[in-house]
Amino acid sequence: MAALTATASPASAAVAPVDLATAGNFAVLAGSSVTNTGVSHLTGDLGAGSTVTGVSPAMVTGAEHIGDPAEAQAEADLATAYNDAAGRTPALTVAGDVGGQTLTPGVYNSASSLAVNGTLTLDAQGDPSAVFIFQIGSSLTTGSGSSVTLTGGAQAANIFWQVGGDATLGMNSTFAGAILAQAAITLTTSATIDGLVLARNGAVTLDTNTVTDDDGPALAITSTAASGSTSPGDTVEFTVTIADTGQTPYADAALTDSLTGVLDDASYNDAAAASAGTVSFTTPDLSWTGDLAVGDTVTITYSVTVHDPDTGDMSLASTVTSAEAGSNCPSGSSDSRCSATVAVADDTLSITVPASADLGSAAPGGTVSAGLGDVQVTDNRAGLAADWTATVSSSDLTTGGGTAPETIPAADALYLISGFTATAGSATFTPAPSTTLSASAQAVVTATNVQGDNSVSWDPVMQVSVPSGAIAGPYSATITYSVS
Image (cartoon, rainbow, N blue to C red; front, side, top):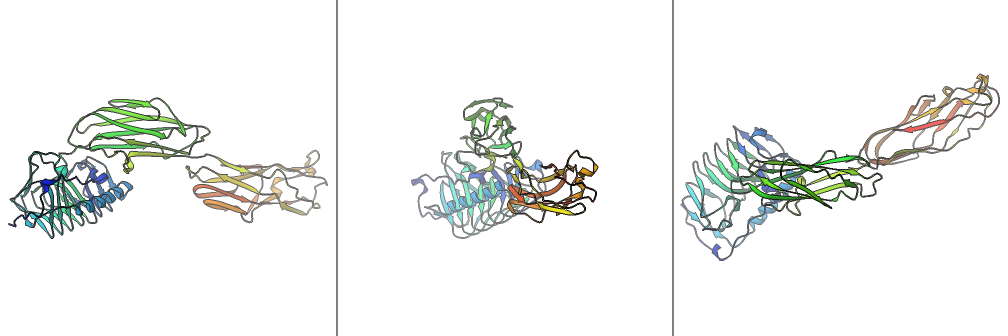
């Protein structure tokens, strides 16, 4: 058994805990994959950079995040926490196997690997806020049946194991604290940890394990909107859920949903409801207070109506904060679950056309053609990203009393598009090169793969075949445009 050699006294100054930020919401977090065998139980969220195998929803009390923004943010926060733990000084030196020892609060450093065989006791000496940080140069291993025991008020939430390589917990071993490993973490059969399993770059392998932070409160807050986009005049419903996912009940828990980024575009409908507790509104904040037992979930709903016209910034952005211990939404949190944003589409799709055009003249049996002038479609529905189609219809061309000799049927006219004079925005614009006119609307330009605002203009040519029996005179027709 290796001896413990002190190089500095941790009792001379209190050690600050390592801030895990959003990574602290994850019972298991892997930079690559998570693989499980048997039935494991995870208290908290589950995150993986690539895949999760063998974990059913019933095994996880929190949410599952695979390569999404929440997982990416947690990985970034883990990297920050890892570097924080690795850089702490002063440190006591430990080496080899620390099983059978009793350690007091402080920062401990092992230049290479560290093992726990038997029982390691961590004694907080009566201070429940005391912090233990272990800096391990390479690997961390625990033997089968080994344990990390807490005494003197020590809390698993204040224990951090920064591991430069892999970490492996032995069969039927019990462990305490958050493992922050550079590489992979393996929990062998029936190993349990009162803490967190956080792997920066490697995989996490589980086998019938229990991962839970029994000492730490955990308040999971999620804010969502019924739709990602809306239009002026529409009503939008927001939902906030608050769940006690830890092992500590909350009395008079509180949260605030700031609607500052909503009320410049919409009006609050004064109809908030909560499944438990009390909800109130004082401009610009929605507030909730209530009690939460372990495992409880409270749902808050409210709605706003978008101004018509909307003269704001065309975005409804709410932000939830809670100062409760274990909350994932403290002030300034970057957790994506703490906010909900809805884009307001201008909802304007319009077409502008020339007032009139003179095609010139042609003898009976001849053909006349000329440009009609620029036609433009403008689509300002950025939040909707919807495809559209422009259509054209035409009445017959008539002169005098509109008798048969005084009529040129619309079907004797062609609507020709040789190309576009201008395009803007991200969309695929497709013209119909030649369209036979009729009283029915004919599609002449379509926009597909629309992403955001866009516009297109064209200068069409109308070509008319004059019947041989047509009488002389000025002929006119009404051309009708539409876009939808």
